[in-house]
Image 1 (cartoon, rainbow, N blue to C red):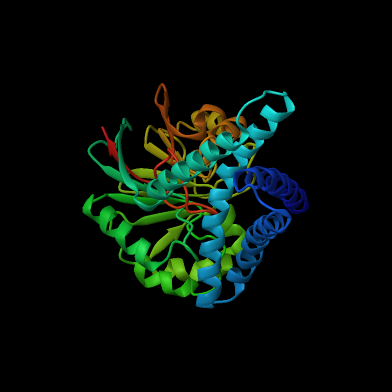
Image 2 (image 1 turned 120 degrees about the horizontal axis):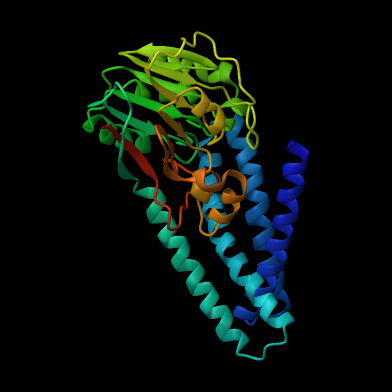
Length: 356
């Protein structure tokens, strides 16, 4: 699976470099030497992102972090340049006669606008308020955090601001539905004291995501203990009359086929909350009389128009609140981001859930 992912990524990056190279060559009306500079710059952006992403996982160098942020930002802009570059190539292939220079200028301008909007949507998370009916747990408040991706980009300063917002909501319970960490080992222990500032009457519960798992749960467990955060892995626990089921990460694109859950109580009408990183296992949850499922992972596509891609994987459950009888599921778009800190038309969120 890892080889297939990186092979696909390299193919897509190659297409991006080639199409944007031809696009910018027209935009700059570049000479042969100018074209070479454009090509080298594009290769540097893609190669630099991959290299600094790998280095940032193992080294705590501030220089590596700075370059990782720079290359991540450049990659975000490259994404939108690629969209307009591909459209530009399609227009040329169709033989449509027009002012190609003007088209590239419009494309570059729109890319910059979409990129800037994405920076704002990622950098200024909102509090998303929703109301859900959950039998026998009315009048409570749950705050969901998902896909924070703490690491090289989202550091202590960002986390501190979000914790202030969370605590101001005065929640009864805080849940973190995976990808709390981005896969960076360096300075991992510094997050423990900051996460310990999260305050809820009934504590903080965490289930792992794919980035947490790839980093190594053995590495993040000491951080969670330091922060007094309880990790559930295919396990159930009852707190203040609410039975919370936390599922481990098994598969990203398939249901887990009735995972065995330790300490799950016989159903007698109690309120049940399911925490699972990916928005799946809906039929299983309904059969188990789950009243509310909280998930994340999809980022709601993160950068428009990638919502179409996440919809292919998770259907309507890829984002938002969906209700079917007594069953509710909310999939968060996430608080952080992966790769470019860009979330165009898709604002980062803290989910404030009132149980009605």
